[in-house]
Image (cartoon, rainbow, N blue to C red; front, side, top):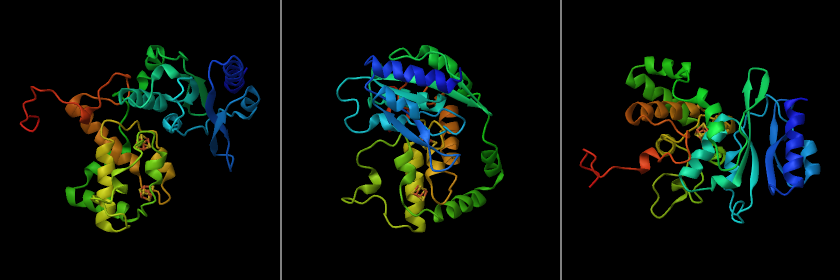
Length: 276
Ligand code: SF4
Ligand code: SF4
């Protein structure tokens, strides 16, 4: 039995027994390489499920859609390790109750799709164990190494050039599971913190602010990169911020549902005077 057949049977079982009200997975997209989200509410809908190496999108952001979890019923979802880290962060930030989530875990290794051990609601210890490979020892992105070889002026020019192509469509924000604010700072106009038109300064402000908001929260899923219509390598800047946070605070995002958000927590005895 293939992993797709195995999980299809599991989804049907979960839906037919009423263990979950919905399962979020993947179905064929507009081309052979693309997949779309699939929201299964009946066992019959599970026949559309696809699980293969093209299922790369992190689906965790759909869990915080307004009202989805407000009735306390459970929802199943297909997640790779980056998605599992995402729901840990969402739980730590009080955006969802982890007991309501049934994870159907999988990982992609080259041309293979493997099931992750430990499907669960509430107890993620087995799943967390199975994503340890994604912990801090994960190799650095070679493109980051290249950018770090640049001097500060070259590096600033590199990002200025990249951000100058931004058209302020906010697709990166909409696709990111960690960008769940109902009203984003960029949409505020009284006062207006960030210029909404697409020009050099406003683009830099927008992308830098977003990188700060994702410090210690980005799971490196790449939803933002893939959504960006002008192909700005957004994941790089967030990955670099992740390295800073790891070095400064020994914090690797999403390894536990009780991990405090690194930029939203403080200690009263912090030696820095800005705390009190
Ligand atoms: S910033 Fe990009 S890579 Fe990081 S969690 Fe959001 S979508 Fe994923
Ligand atoms: S998706 Fe790309 S073009 Fe759109 S706002 Fe984000 S960085 Fe700019």
